[in-house]
Image (cartoon, rainbow, N blue to C red):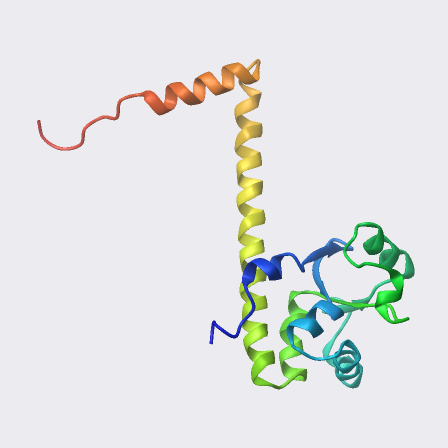
Length: 163
């Protein structure tokens, strides 16, 4: 099954942050599900009750322009005249109940795993940033910080057990 599922690295490149939410766009999801964007949108519109605002929202004209300016999409025309839908992690999970194919199941599993990895990475980055910030508070310069870290690495470790 993993052979069919898309690579998680390529999925990470299809995650964006809009309105403070990590999202995936309808055209990226349609490509992954191997369906047309309009087909995906039609399925969502037929089941709007399953997609509250915290699961899925339509981008504003300004948000779409921002995506174009950040080279996420080549041009506003590539959207086909409609503003894209943005799906949060819960919205992507809900898509599996709307799109019922073997491909949709495999893709959904890969996407959910990617969201989990992204969450873990963001926690790791925050932890590293917090540690550096705490270390910098007690040192006058970066040089002192580096020397301190090198000294900590070269200290001999105490042996455990009976001598």
